[in-house]
Length: 343
Picture (spheres, rainbow, N blue to C red):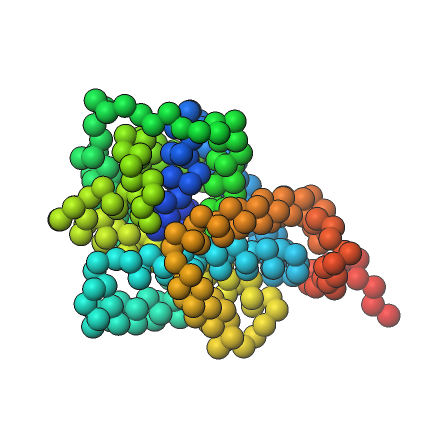
């Protein structure tokens, strides 16, 4: 059961609005044409090794994020970019055309976010276990209906940089959920960590492959705010909106947990933690979904690489991590250090 919970939680980090709407897939994959399909092999290994690294680091990664100013700032900025995109999708869904339904759903979202801030990873896992299986099945069924192998594939542009963008995509998505993934690792055995990492990587890459194929067959949708969503009409679009609603908010909840957990290493004010974790990304979301994904996501992905390198480096020499002392000075908390001198 622990492996199942871990798989759904890790998939939930990536399976958000940018993924389901097709905007992320267009920016990081489909625009490079049919060569982007080959990158799925690279992604399987990249997802697997980074998932496993974070699960293995466990409490050390959580403590690092709670005590390092560098890790905290990088995690906060990238998580805010991602969380704001999740909120931005809600503004564009037709299901929100009714004002009273819109208010009701936002009350539910803000309430669940507050409970995640208070109750932590256990409450988040329950939400993922309930919501994600249904969402994945609906999303895959809609994609299979849209596949048409008689259509030519988009040839793409600037294919030389495609592998770089793929790695940025992995870093962006996983780094923002680093605290949550590391927390999951504290309850898993070594074998379970490998199993969860492998299953989550295969599931994500399978869905990404199919979604990428659909976009490559319909390149005219690239210019839309939500490319995949623009391909569906009527009942199918309504179903996709439901999946978008669930997907963007399960990812949002993971980010709320990530931000609130890291903030507790520096702040004890619950109201400030809730404001930074939920209200601030809600305000940023009014920049617009397309703007956030096109401009803030690539920036956040670079920060994600810095965060993952810092966590990996600090695991070998815990407490030091990457050295940016020139502009980031911090007195690290030595909670369990046997080297601390007392007189």
